[in-house]
Length: 358
Image (cartoon, rainbow, N blue to C red):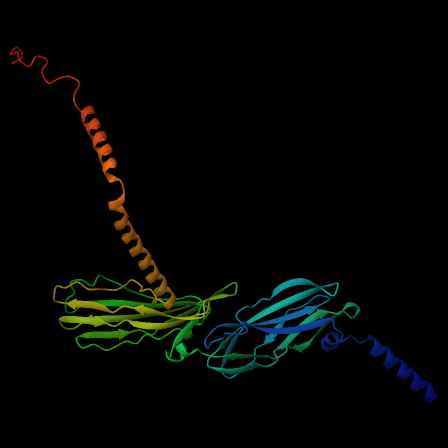
């Protein structure tokens, strides 16, 4: 009797084991669930540049629930999940249709060095065929990369690494004919793409005797649209004229590493000259100064000047040798013909010698 009971219990246990659904790990081991990770771009990375950590989850069935990502913390890196939804697609793998989820995390290296992003934990739910829906946790493969600032950047101290960057200023009133007691405001605005607002440069405000300065805290704005991030840093500085005189509101120069061309450029905000009680006209300098010319641009400008000078010299050498006398005679003949056509057909007086009309 005891042997029959043991056999029955073993049979029930076997049936329970056979009916238990597989785990997501077992699906991955069976080649029915795949996880990959990639860092983009993979090379020519500088500190403060935006990278994308792409996490790809694929299955030969389909996803039946949302995927949750646990963002890791890595010293020297800022890792953010700015997109709440994955990019879904379908692919043909080994002759079978697969469903693919692609998640993108923003990664910003804050210094030079080698970095390793550890396995990212992914909580997901997929269909397992006859076993129904199963939920579990997987991890992505680790990713390694290196960030290195070129020599040009190492000498600047602070820079913005982005495909687009601009700086501008404006004033809330005309600065001509200022008198003691007048107040005005100056707005400094930095804008860039593919960076965070906290990575935009600070604007240093100097104290000036005779001109009271009241800087407001900077306003930081971050926005994202279809994976493209925009950052804006604005600061308002208020001034009150306390004494007559000539004053200079300093501008500044700001380093920009153009990630589209992998080149260092400079943006300049010009100084602003104002007069208080002196009847002078202020130079607001609100126009944005273009970046400094690169060596390639200077060579192109020099080549253009050389070609223009050569064309002038060629014209000076050829003009005396052209048969201009014949063209000059023809032009003079045409001019005389036109002058004759302008003369009236009849004289002013029909009988010049008569006094009847007088």
